[in-house]
Image (tube, rainbow, N blue to C red; front, side):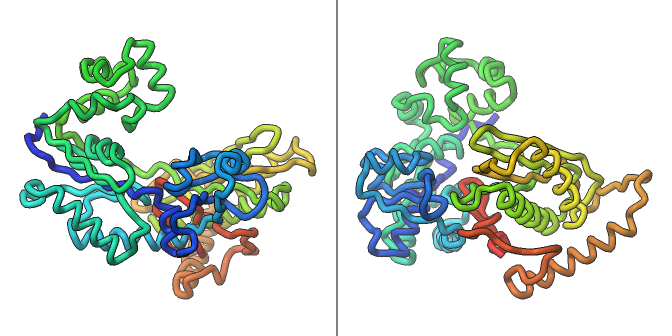
Length: 414
């Protein structure tokens, strides 16, 4: 396996992305501690917060009541997912004018490969990126950048000098920068893995680096541990390409829309949004799952399907799941969150029909209708036609909520 003798990757992480975009949009919020919340009013949690709020002790996924106790002048701002999507796209464009973007890892993280000229002047590349953002987008949005021999080390480096930081980890200086970090600063080491490592006598970065590849593979119970060992030791290792495994959407219900009837309406909209994404990506699904979180607990139900992607087949399956999941609930049940998942995906060119199920002509009719509705909605850039009623709940954002891992498309907000 190749071990680079120079830096080859740049990793960029925007600082408090969602809050920074809000501050860019609204000058009155600049310099103030702000917290992004799912909706206005009610008991909720902080989805993301600004650097000013973080400096006061506010953290992501903190309940609003607690955040307000810590920071009394915290400004709560309801999420605007489509705004963040548009900001992300513009930022990618500006960074691409300086250096080609290799991989968009999330809505607020990306990586780039360096050519020979860029390897010689990483500080100049970082400065050019920061200038492009500052003068072409706005000074409210900053980023932290890391350079290293591989993407994994560059990602770790980018988080060591936040906010608005720059870290250059050249191979000849390694592993000294790593030795200063706690284990939970390493992507892939969460609380459970930290406990497992501790049981194996690994409690420091020095101890982790002193292991052998097969030892980490055994601790992780898969090749991920071995891959991490090579990444931390500076080898040019790339994660294998991943295949799409599912499509789904979930939503926290607003405080005034938490009855079963509200949850049923929203689950239907979430399913239609998921089905549209399945069709746009050229897939069929063989399974559907519905889950809900109540005040008293949670529920989950799933069904196996023939290979389908049309709304009629999926809505029929959802109705069956709903009856199964709610049969023991009462009209007083309050639902906090609901989600729908379509899994067991098959690409259109690999679809195999069930020869014992004689419904192909009927299904083709519904698929043609679905395609016609999709084309109509695309033409007008919004949902103008659907199978059954279309009534988004208060606050909107069904299928287009704030996302740290997936970049929403414009269609998610129709």
